[in-house]
Image (cartoon, rainbow over all chains, first blue to last red):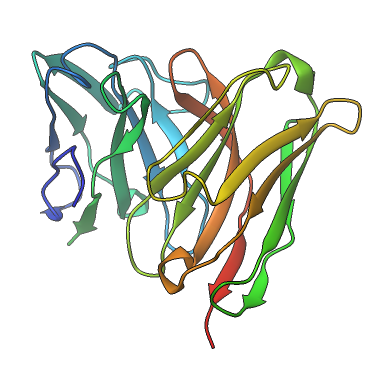
Length: 110
Length: 118
């Protein structure tokens, strides 16, 4: 059971905006920044957002992130078929002195 | 171009040992913390271990602590994970990744599969 809690699934149609939430606690999201990873089917994970809302080079601005208190969210606007993937939030936990991943959210583009 | 290539995975019996390797190229390996992450079949990502640039500090998930050792050879630009007393629940694809800041992983390898089964 992950300490970072995400919904197991999300869905949307092309062009729509979807959001994925990530709930943590004071020792992880409450204290440290949140990062998001995208894992396409059969592929290695890829960094999508870091320090809550920063996009690495090459990541479209359709992807955005936010953090408030002990929760964070990933928003994808203008949904595309190629966005169908698993999305993971992640943060460092100061109590565990270790890294944490959320359980992952499978996004289906209908 | 940054590249991370894992190797060393395979089939091992419960209680056995395995040493995973990760060959790095395209960046100054000795400048970065490195991380191992694993993914059991059909399940989510799990952080395994981190190691500091010079190998002087390392951190482990409770699930592998005492059974696994992360190490590195900066001259060979290589990261390692020695796994002992392997359990069925250690079955997973193991990824090495480059760590930035306080735990974001900006480059990942393609992974190597470890299967623990009798």
